[in-house]
Image 1 (cartoon, one colour):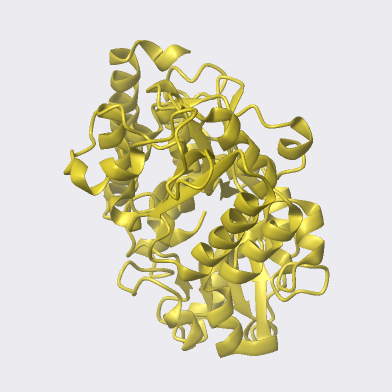
Image 2: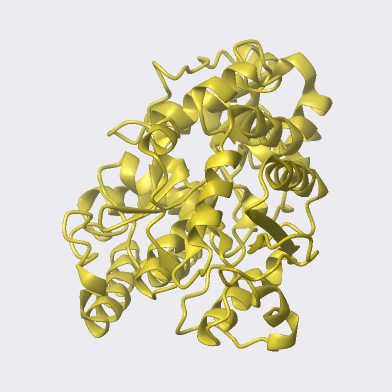
Amino acid sequence: MRRNSLTLIVSGALATTLGLTACGQAGQGGSEGDEAAGGDGGATTVTMWTHSAGNPAELEVYERIISEFNASQDQYEVVQEAFPQGAYNDAVVAAAAAGDLPCLIDMDGPIVPNWAWAGYLQPLDLPTEITDALLPSAVGEYQGEIYSAGYWDAALSVFARQSVLEANDIRIPTVQDPWTIEEFTSALETLKAAGYETPLDIGAEDTGEWWPYAYSPFLQSAGGDLIDRDSMLTADGALNSEGSVAAMTWFQEAFENGLTSANGTIGNQEFNDDAVALSYTGVWNAMDSLEAVGEDLLILPPPDFGNGPAIGGGSWQWGISADCPAADGARAYLEFSFADEYITEFADNQVVIPATATAAEASQLFGPDGDLRPFVELSENFAIVRPETPAYPVISSSFEKAAKDIMNGADVNDALDGAVTEIDANISSNDGYGF
């Protein structure tokens, strides 16, 4: 999941209502037997919304796929409308309330269970040879049913300069032998002593979904989690577990001891300028750092808090709306679109990890000799999707608040217990969200 794609997750109950004039037109039409917008022979219109209006590299690939799908047959015509990302989720929620969703919608991975539970989506029902070939984190499920699938994923890592680590006699970790949290802390202390005022850019100046995406893997690496995933009915015993407390205690002490700070700028500029020695960041910042650092750049696994490294998984994926009148056409388009050549083009155009091994092999950036190949290995080995429950929007906001309070000095146990209370109350008030 790209960091700039994480600014907004809205549950149906919390969504603001947008003027439907902004989204209603694109959601109209699409009835079986309707003529396509071009009126050129009775093709059924399949309406499609994306969040990608501000991303020309991504839109370029969609336009190619749509053009080639429409030209490949005469039964359906896919008609796309692109929205600015900041308004997209609200537009979907408003259209759902008005019964005017388009057939095809994309969505950020963690919101999929909420929208499936809310009745926005129907099961995806793509052939298993498509979904089984995807990275697990590129498939969105709710209660064991697949509701979405995506062409890519993102991954977090630790950026470093090889020359800096070697000059300070710091071991270079690998996927097979990552830093323990004790080694990582020691490395940060060494780098601080070497002159880096705050040696790690951990990204704490960012807000919103970045916080659970970036920092809840610390819990899982330490044996904790955001919620009890066996039942999906309570956060008690998971978010306030011994492992979670240990992870967030480390997090708090990293700020208290000046190993990191929340005073940087969003992005990776401090690392590129060598103002910090290490950066906890994602694939979306890799090209700028490659340009700044060159062959000295190392893309390293995150530290192991005891149960193995963990990183967040799940990015933008595609689903079919529950009331889509042209579901067969929507499904035919998606089957067509998951060709490896398109997945590779998405990856190299917008610097995201290909969702299939075959597409990754063909990628210039992520192939066996690609500069960004380490991200494929990190995603394959360490990605954990955020809890697949409709309660996730509340889990996300509750964890963000607790983690920020901890960063600012709150008692770790009290902060996590408070988040547990908020999450459990929400789950209880929604009768367990179907679990």
